[in-house]
Length: 227
Image (cartoon, rainbow, N blue to C red; front, top):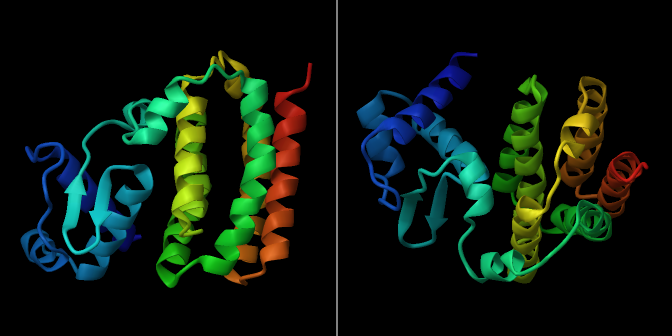
């Protein structure tokens, strides 16, 4: 519990300081010394922030801060994927259909290509969706989990396609559909489905990961597209 508190303290500190958007952060060693915590805590906090889209790590360069809000990040994703997705006119029905066609394959590839760090990040996602006790908190944790699976494929084309999909999702007119769907009962069932996907990825069982993700998406599709 203390470790979780320290991780949240580091996260809050980095977001609440006067550091400007896009600024390069100090190294893990320097941050650990400045904040009086272990480098492992710093590493976990940065992993959480990366999942949230609050920092970006550039190999050979360093870690850079993104201080926009979670809601803002959903609507302001950078790169060519954003421009492409914003030009799309898609309905919630089409979004759900695309998820069903796309995400099981991502889970299967993640099981084959994931690294130890990816598994740590997915584990942190699991802790976050198990702690989420409201619609808004769960929706953020759910998106982080699925995005981290996409990142774990380590396939730039698929990651770019997923970012396009998520930006289109942010621009679709959902209205109250999500709120009606993500009831407390459905969130509890979804946690179990997520855990099944995660277990398959940890076991590097591509077929099981594909099947678990497909089953999860079947429940979502049937509920969201119900007349």
